[in-house]
Length: 193
Figure: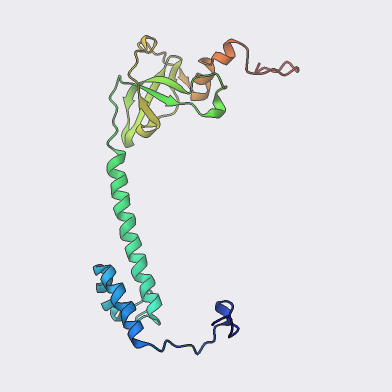
C-alpha cells in the first residue's frame, strides 16, 4: 500500500500523516503501561519533567521519554558497578602464598611456559601485590585478577633474590627455547639468538 503511494523510505512520508484510530492509540499506551510498573509512573510524570538548562516543560513527549530512559540507564549502570565492586574484592591472597602470573604471548616462544610461578611477598593498598620469582622481585605490582593460585610445590621459591626484574626478563630466563638455542635462526649473528 505504501509502495503504491510512492513511499519508499521515511523521507517520502508526508508531514500531514495522522493516526486515525484512537482505540489503537489507547491500546498502545495500555500495553506500554502494563509492561513496566515503573514506566507507567514515569509516563504520568511526563508533564512535570523539564529539560536540563530550561525552566519550561519539554517541547515534545519524545524528549521526556529520552530523559526517563537516560535516568533508567544511569540506575542500571550504578547497579552493575556495585556488583562488579563486590566481586572484585572477593579474591584475596596472603603473604607467602604461591601464585602464577600469565606471560604475554609476545614475551615467550612457542615451547615456553605460559605462566611464571611466583610468591606473594607483600600486600599493598588498592588490592595490589608485590611478587617474587626465582630470578628476583618483579618490578611491577599485580592485582588479584591478574594472578591464579598454584597448588604445586616450588622449593626454588623459598629464597628469592632481592634484585628487581621485569616479567619479560624473567620469562626469558626461564625460557626453554633459549636453552636449546631455538629463538632466532637469522644468519646475521644478532644478539637475540
